[in-house]
Length: 154
Length: 176
Image (cartoon, rainbow over all chains, first blue to last red; front, side, top):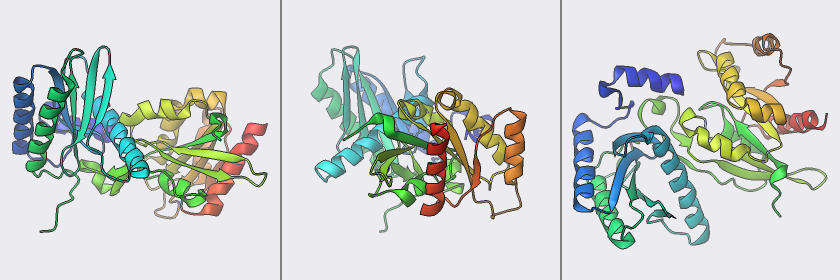
């Protein structure tokens, strides 16, 4: 609903809060986790946290990348991948890895209703990149943000 | 086993009933990629399709038609391109319970204009009875202004019978 998105962009601070249910403090902590992950691992060139229905929540992307499109594409890829694993091996997926000569992309679940997309350089050590991505996803999940409104029943 | 030429695509805005419609006529439980909605879209519905719905139906002559449903939101328009490749035609579902449903119809007709020009489209209006909103005549009048002639039906997206009427109408349009 483009008109809704436009409206939300207009009324929200900095135009990038996008009508989500994550508090300003939550956004700050997401930004901090992404910064730490990228600082700790030089192989990583960018990262984004998005809601599972394709809304960008926090990002450190190279300029020129459209966060809205990437958030939507990450959701679509992860959702289809979930289906593939469910219908073949019957379990839960750990990550999606896309490799190319010009760089790699990891997509991971990062807690309820959240996903983490990480970009790594073409010469990156994949294992090291994935280890840092996994740590980032675990840290994000530990924030218990639940943008989808789903909360565990204690 | 799989002929991409025998596929039709269901599209339309969020909440028009695309996932329900495919589920209503499928031979098998559809492949679904719905996730919980967040932010302002939670007011519209609880879950939304983020990649595609997929299933198929068998026609009386045994021919199998593959059914693909698109996500509704514009931010997923890359999936619109992917899913329409090689398609036979389009079923456009429009939720009448919207402030400007006729405008919504126009938006999707424009977004899929190239595909429609090459193939064909039928339009199904869902949730007609929810509030006193646009009538079928209003949709047809707007199409007339646009110098377009497409079949428009009032449908219940959850009704197998209604959705089959749409599919059969599309196949009839495509034969002409």
